[in-house]
Amino acid sequence: IPIPVVSGVFLFLGRKLMTGNTFFQRITDGFAERARLPDKNPIHLLGRKKMNIYTGVQVLCLLGLFGFKQIPSITIFFPVMIGVLMSIRAFVLPKFFNEEEFDALGDQTPQIKRSKSTMTSDAVVQKGLQC
Image (cartoon, rainbow, N blue to C red; front, side, top):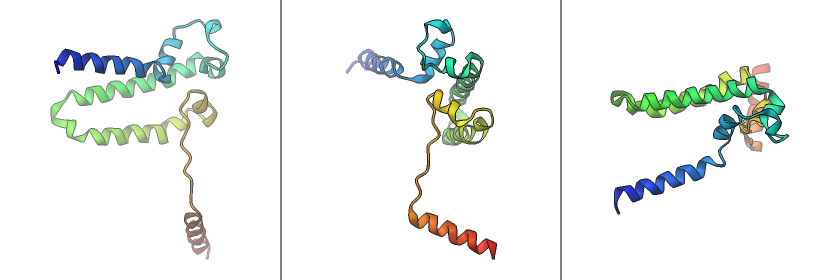
């Protein structure tokens, strides 16, 4: 298969995936008039400044990943950078955004479902600490 055909397929797939992506939607909405946006848009719920701050953090993380990837001697540590991004989302961003704002931005925090055995072992550990 010729390389231009494969490149065209990947270009088409990448463009197709971007249409439903909230990240790219927020970038375009950041330049749109507020009156032209739907009622459920994050700009109406959070304000343009707060939405643009969140999107800006995402752009900086994306640029950081791209820059990290461009240095051949450290690309072996790329999985570590993914862990850093997860840490930013889990520990840094919740200091600036609450759960309702994450929900409005389309980035809900995953809830951990705990089994009964895990909950009972946690209760035993807590009771052991109280003694």
